[in-house]
Amino acid sequence: MSQQISSRGGAAWALVITSVAGFMAALDNLVVTTALPSIREDLGGALHDLEWTVSAYTLTFAVLLMFGAALGDRFGRRRLFLVGITVFTVSSAAAALAPGIDSLIAARAIQGVGAAIMMPLTLTLLTAAVPAAKRGMAYGIWGAVNGLAVASGPLIGGSLTEHISWQWIFWLNVPLGIVLLPLARLRLAESYGTGARLDIPGTLLASGGLFGIVYGLVRSPAEGWTNPLVLTGLLTGGALLVAFVLYSTRAKNPMLPMRLFRSRAFSGINAASLLMFLGMFGSIFLLSQYMQGVLGYSPTEAGLRMLPWTGMPMLVAPIAGILSDRIGGRPVVAAGLFLQAAGLGYMASVATADASYASQLPGLIMSGIGMALFFAPASNLVMSSVRPHEQGIASGANNALREIGGALGIAIMASVFSAQGGYESGQAFVDGLRPALVTGAALVALAGVAALLIPGRRHPVPPQSPTSSESAPKPEPTLETVSG
Image (cartoon, rainbow, N blue to C red; front, side):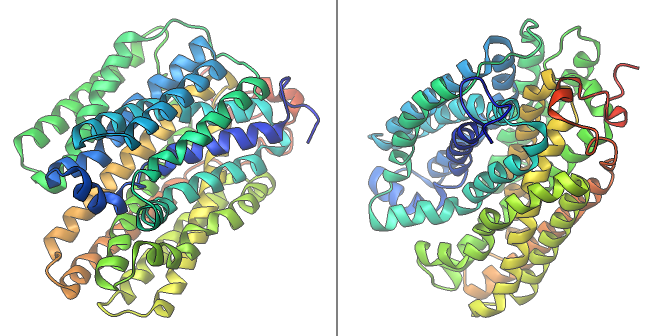
C-alpha cells in the first residue's frame, strides 16, 4: 500500500481522512431526528421550527454540492477541503452552543455549506491517492463508512441525547474536525481540475433550481403538495433547472457538462443513486419512528435492533468493492439494489402493531447486505465514467442527486403514510407504514433496473492500470463519447 500513492502521504491516510470527513457530513443528515423532542424542550419552537433544524442542513448541502466541487477544481481540492472542514467544525460548535431555535437553524444551514464543500472532494482526493488497481477496495471502505453514517444517524443521535445531552450530537464533530485539519494538510496532495473560470450563470441557475425543488420537497409533508409556497418552489425550481440544462449545452466551460450524460454509465449510476436514496431515506425515517412509537423501544434500543441493517456496510462493503474490481460494478450494484428492495418488501409484509424482532430480522439483514453492495461499486462507477479532470464535478453531481433523492424520498413516503395511516394508534401507524415501505421497495427495485442499463466492465477492468489512469477515456470508449 506504500507504492504509487499521494506525494504527501499514503493511500491509507487518504482513506482514513476522506472516510472520516464523509462520515461527519453524511451523519448530520439524520442525526437530529431522534433529538427533536429534547431540542424542543430546551429551546422551544413550534413543529415548523423543529422541522427546519433538519431541513436547513439538507437544503444548503444539496444546493451547494456542485458549486463546492467546482470551487475545489478551480482553487485546489485540498485547499477547499480544508475550508469545508473548518466551516463544518466551527458551525457544529455554534449549533451545540445555540441559545435559541433560530440560532440553531442558522448554524445548521452553515453546517450544510461546509459539508457541501467537503463532501464531493472526499472521493476526488481519494481517487488521486489510491492506485487504480486498488480503488475498488478503497471505495468499498469509504462507502461502508458513509453508508453506516447515513443509516446510524438516528441511533447515534438518540443514544447521545438519551445518555448525555442533545448538544453532543454536534460536539461530536468538533474533535474530529480538529484532528482532520492538520492530517489533511500534511497527508493529502493538492490537485486541480481543468483550471477553467467559474461558471457563475450556471452556478446561479443550478443553485436556484435545486433550492426551489428541495424547499418544496421538505415543506410538502407539513404544508401539503398544493400549498402555494410548495408549488412555487417546485415549479420555479424545475424551470430554473431546465434553463440550467439548456444553458449548459451551449456554454463553453459549464459547471456540469451535459455531455457527461451521453455516457450510459454516468446516466445509469446517477439514476440508480437518486432512486436508491429515495427508497432508503424514506424507509429509515419511518422505521425508526415505528420501532420507537409503536414497538416501544427507546432511541438506543431501536438503533441497536437496526444494526443488522445499519451495521452491515462495515462488513460487506469492502468485499463488494473487491468484487466490483473483479467482475465489474454493474452486477454488484444491481444485486444490492434488488436485495434491498426485497428486504423493504419483506419488512412491509411482517409489520404489525406488535411484531416481534425475530420476524423483522430477515428483512433487516437483506436490506443491510443490499445497501452495502450498492455503496462501494456505485462510487467506483461514478468516478470511472468520466475523465480524471472531471471527477470532482461528477462526484458533486452524484452527491447532489443523492441528497435530493433523500429529501424526495421522505416527502413521498411521508405523503403515502399520511394518506393511509397516522399517529393516532399503533395500528394506524402500521396502516400507513406498510404502503410506504412498498413504495420504497418499488423505487429501489426501479433503481436496480437503472443499474442494469449501465454498460458492462469488460472494457476497463483488465486493461486499466495505474500508468494509464490519466488517459481513462481510452480503455473505455463506450463510457465516454465526447471526443468523437
